[in-house]
Length: 476
Image (cartoon, rainbow, N blue to C red):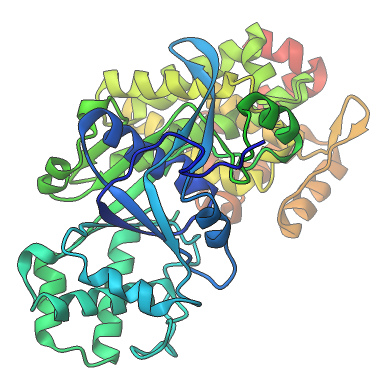
C-alpha cells in the first residue's frame, strides 16, 4: 500500500504566502482546512510553511508526506449526520528551526509572504527574558516571530507593503494584543530601533481571534479501518467536527484579503469580537454547564443522549432560547443560528461527550458561564430565569455526591468539596440553599440579596430531593 505524498496523490501546489507556527491537530483541522477551501473555491493561492514552535514536534513526519494529510469531518451538516474526508494540500513544507534555523529565517526574504498564523498552546504567547536576537532559535514563539519580522524589516528596508497580517489562534483573551506587546518588548530588549517599532505599529496588523471547532485529533483506535477505506497510509490523519467558527478582530482591510465569503466559511470579521466571545461562553459553554447536573441526576450520561431525551432536551432548549439568548446583544438571527448550531454539535453521533467529564470545577464554571446570564436576565426582565436557577438547585444536589445510591466522582477545588460536604451533613435543605447562595467565594456576590431568588432555589432544591429529578423536571 502506498504512503501518502505528492507522488502518490494528485494535489496542487501554491505560492508560499503564510507562515504557520504550529503543525498540530487543531491548526490542520481548522485553519489549514479553511485555507484549503479558499484555495480550491476562490483562487486564494496561499501555500503554508509550517514551523515547529518547540523542540519536539511533527515536522519530520509532515515533510515525509510532503505536507499532505487526510482530514475527516464528522457531525451534523444540513440536518444530517455526515462523515466526509479529503486530502488537505495547502502545507507546502515544514521547517524545524531547532535543526534548520537558517531556512526558517530565510522565509523573511520571501516577497510573497503576507500572513502569520499560530497555535502554540495557551502558554505559547509568553515572554522569555533570556531570549536573544542571535539565538538560533529563540526559545519562545514571540521571540522567533520578532526575529523573523526584524529580518523582513531589514531585507525590504522597512517597506510598508511587506508588513504581515498576524492571526494567532491561541486560546487566550486578546491573543493578538498580547503577542504584539511581547514583540515590542523584544524590540526594546534587543535595541532594534525606533524605525522597526514604527514599522510594527504602522505596517503589521495583529488580530485578536476567537476559534471554535472540536478536534478529537488522530483516530488511533480506528486507523486500521481508516487505512483500508483510504487505500493509502497516512500517519497524520486528523478528525474534526463539522462546525467551525473563526472570529477575527481587525481592520476591514483584513477581510478584503481573505476570501472567506466566497467559500461560505464561517469566518466573522469584526472590529469588536467581545459580543462573539460572550455569545460562545454564554450559549455553548453555558448550555453545557446548565445541562450537566440536570441531565446527570436525571440518569443520563452523555450530552447527545440528553438532547435525544424529550424532557431534558426541551429543558435545555428552553434555557438557551428563552433565558440565555435574551441576555445577549447580537441580532436574534445570529443568536438563533449559533444556538441551533450548538444543539447540532451536542447531537453529534461521532463525538461522545460524557456529562461527568464536563462537571469538573462546576462551581467556578457556573459562575463564569451561567451566572452572568442569570444576573443579566434579572436586570433586563425584572424576573427570575426559572430554568437557569433550576440548574443551580440541581448543582447543589449534584454536590451531595449521590445518584440513585451510587457515589458521584466529584472533582472540584477541595474547599468547594469541603463546603458542600459540611452543608449536606446537616440535611437541612433551606439552610443548605441559603449557605450556598450567600457564599460570595463561589459567586462573587450574595445571591440571597436578589428578590425571590432564595425562595425559588429552595423550592426547586426541595422538589428535586423529595420527589426526584425526573418528577421535578417534568413539573418545571
